[in-house]
Image (cartoon, rainbow, N blue to C red):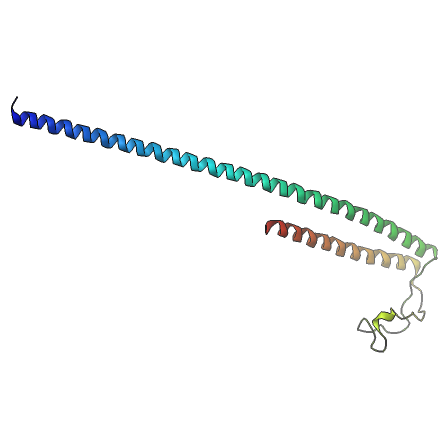
Length: 167
């Protein structure tokens, strides 16, 4: 073997070793990248699971609070329905009555010549409404009041949810 052949064989071996080293380095880098990627995914999943548990607990607390408020609202609605039925019975039997105002109703809620603390002025006793019409009028007023209470509950729920979301 001549020195050129030895030099050529050495160069080929050196190139082979360099290529082998380069491929191992690429493989090592790819493995490290994959390990880091999987570790980041695991950390992200753990954080997501922890956040989901916190959110579930917050939702359960909010549902419990709203359940208590719904039970109170249901009781209040039941009490109002009983009061309405009693008021309508009293009106229909003639125990209570509704009267039309004897004088024109002022545009403002309080006349200028008396204070609001004095309460409403006594009605001068206009004509009585027919008991059936009076009972219907009380029922309509009760329906409006019920709608206002439901609206207030919707607003209260919205505010509670917004407060939870703002955390």
